[in-house]
Image (tube, rainbow, N blue to C red; front, side):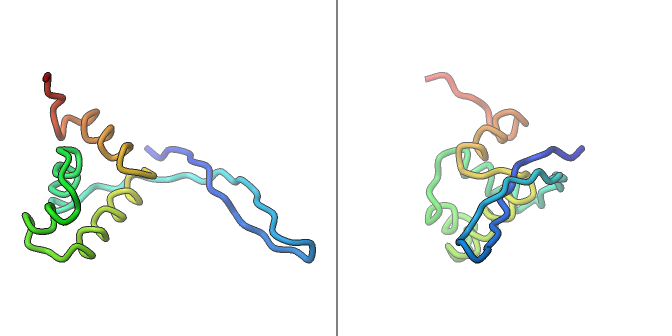
Length: 96
């Protein structure tokens, strides 16, 4: 149910900064209905301002939803969000 990802732990010592890679389990949590709406619109190619306007929320609120989605699913960027939405059948792949 969880998946392993690599995280960076930044450690400081007298000689400067050293980075150490550590592995930590990330447990996926369920998305809320609103987060699924946001994920759907992101995967359909809408920009943050457009999504915020459609949902009647501030752009900052929308950005918070996106961060929550990525944290819950262990994703790092928009491309991974879109890929997740396609793989889970949240949005279809359209032939053009």
